[in-house]
Structure formats: structure tokens, C-alpha cells
Length: 123
Length: 123
Image 1 (cartoon, one colour):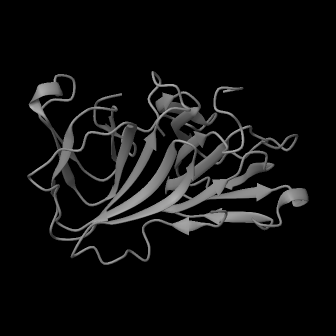
Image 2 (cartoon, rainbow over the protein chains, first blue to last red; image 1 turned 180 degrees about the vertical axis):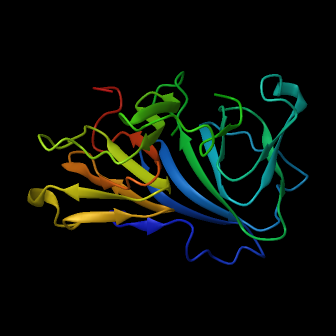
């Protein structure tokens, strides 16, 4: 945790499944690197999370889709290229619609508690 | 907050002073972009923060120095290049020793509460 860690080096092989690695965490907060390689969320379900999630594409390209029911602010989908970031509020139903199959996509994700909820409950 | 925001584009002019921009925040957590251009922390003081700070260099190069009194784990300084990240625990005295003068250095910083402190106090 207290050493320099290059997030663009030594990428794990994500050809079979996405690879999640915790970088730092504390009560209710989690910083993680995600490496995708052509994966998308399974068709069967949406992510609907208790916490806010701030994501950034460090390398690669991706598309996040939002459930039309609550996409008024975010639109139907967001295309993310290198350097692009996006804040996904808690409860906002979303899924990874696409990541480039040509090379790994490296994400940085920060999960953090919503303001409304008492921090001591549920996390 | 709910729109795609490219952190490598439209860089502010940081030639006079570092530029801090909040990207997302909630109770006790703050995600920010910092753009430096040759700056270092003033000689007169160290940063000593109540919260943990996770930093990453998105573009550029920098060096973070640690106070020798509590640098046992981190060493005397850490050189950060593109993609490098570092977790600076709450209370760890540090300063930016150098950033490259040749072009802007773009940082991502996540301030988050230490595990030990009750979340409701002090943040």
C-alpha cells in the first residue's frame, strides 16, 4: 500500500475474465484497478450499487450503458476513451456495454459512500 | 458530475500556480485533478493530512519527499512517472519535491478517511 505501483505495467491476462485488484481501501471507500479485454457485463443483469462509483479509463476504450428508466441525466450510454472519467451515482443501473477487443482496457474505479446514507450503516 | 470528463484534455494553465479541481466528492471523500507545471511544495512546510491520500500521475513526472521522521516504510522519497500511484497514509508528512518543468504534470488524488477515525467526526 505504501509503495509506488504502476497501474499501466504488468497487466494481468484478462482474456478470459476481467481482473479486479484492490489498490487502497478504508471504511466505505475502495480504490481498484480493473483490467478488461473485450468483456461486457452479462446481458442478464445491471449493476445497481449501494455506493457511488467514479470511473476513469486509463488505457483502452469502453462503453457504459444505462438503464433507460434512470438515464435521464446520463443519457443512454457513455463512450469512454483514454483519460475519460464518469461519476455513476449510487443506485444508477448500469452495465459495461463494450470494451475494445483489440487490447486491454485499464480502468480506475473509486467506490465511495453516498452523502445521504449514514456512513456507519450498510457499508 | 454525471458527464464524461476527460482529465487529459483542456488542461488549465498551471505555469503560475498548481490548479486543483474537484471531480467528485461525498462525506469525507474527495476526488480531484491537480495540474502542476514545475511547482514543488514550499520549503517552509510539510503536508500533514487528517485523511489518507491516494495519488497517481496520469501525465508527467514528479517526486514526493517524506519527512525522515516517519519515512521508514516509504523511504526518503518516491519518484513517480506516468501510471505510478502511491498511497500516503493520514499523518504522513510529505511534500512535492519536484515536478517536471518541461510540461504539465497531471495528478489524480483521492482523499479518504482513515479507518481508525469514526467517520462522523471531523470530516
